[in-house]
Structures are given as C-alpha cells and as structure tokens.
Length: 259
Image (tube, helix red, strand yellow):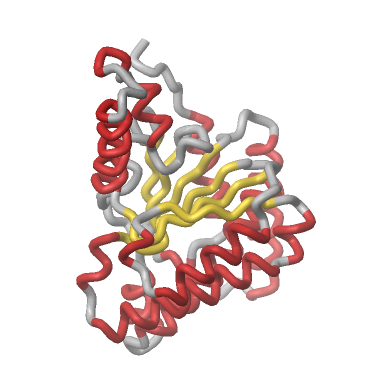
C-alpha cells in the first residue's frame, strides 16, 4: 500500500526539525566550502538535457544554501562557482554561466537578507580571465557589502587552487625582491596571508555534491585539515536535510590535527 504524500511530508518535516535541533546542540563548523557539482547531470536526468536550466536552478540553490548557513550561524561560506578549467566548456555554455554569475552577484548586492544580516560578499579567483560585465557585477556586490562583518560569502569565480598558490608565491617573491621580506621569514603564516581567502579561517568542512569523489583544484592550500563530505545528490536537488546530515557527520568526527 502506498503511503499518502501528506503523511510522508509530515514525517519528513518532523525529522528535519529533530535533526536541526540535534545539529544546533553541538559545535557547528565556522566555515563550510562547497563544490557545487551536478547541474548538467541533473539537467540530463530530470530536465530532458536542458543544461542551461540546470545551471539556473544551481544558481537559485546557491542563494538557498547561503540562507541555511546564515540561519544556522555558520559565519563563512565559500562556493566554487566557476573554475579556471570551466573555461574549456563550449563557448555558449561559458557565456550563459557568465551571465548567470553576473545576475547572481547583482542579486546578492541588492538582497534584503544580505543587508539585514550584514553578509559580506567577496569574490576570489583570476579576474583577468573574466568579461567586463562580470567584473562590474563583482565590484557592485563587493562595494555594496564592504562594511559587513557578521557573515561572509566567498564566491570562487575563475578560481583554481594551484593558481591561488602561484599568485601568493608571486606576491611573496615580489616582496622579497623589493626588500620588504627576507627569504628566511617565509613560513606558513606568510603564505596564508597572501592566499585569496586570507580574511576567512580555513574551511572546517568541504562538501561536494553529485557523488563524485574529487577535489577539482579547489582550495588546495586551505583544505589541509578540512573534513570532507560527499553527497550523492546533484546540486540543484540538494535539500536542507542533506545539508543538516552533512553537518551532523562533521560533528561526529574527531578532529585531531595530527595529534
């Protein structure tokens, strides 16, 4: 006998409330980073191959997950929105994604929740690789939220972990060349201070959707002691209950940092 939908929805809602209470009763991660994977796969499986619609739903999910982080009190959220390797896709898809990113940035800049709860928007990545209209949108979102400190959303756009480290090394080398820094003084803290996320703590948890078990050149320096969680669900269908389960798994692990 099939269980009526209304009963399933009620049971789901009750479990979600219980799970949220359990998660809030324990120490929460300060910083969660997400590899938002599975938009195209979701489009193939659920949208008759409409890739662009899969990406649009992925953009909407980013707004939703930012809200979840803010609601739970997670102060830092980093989203892998577009990698340096993503430029290798078909040009029409890249163009569409650039337009979506522009749209998302303007929306964040004008978002009532962003301003009510003082969410700072920061973009990390190689801006030289981006079209002018996206750079203008970045400037808009960052300038509109520049004075906020309660929460931070880092959007990784035209980002690569190796590129991030190379950029830090170049900055440090220039300081040595200019006589501002001695080679002997270069240590982990110096490198960290030149990494793109230097204003945020390293991520406590890195979450990837779509079931793939790869890090895809994301936050290579920052993830040294991060906990990983791989969700077997595509990004557009990622639910609040999936998010809570990921955090609960993180809370159940013992973080020893090599001790």
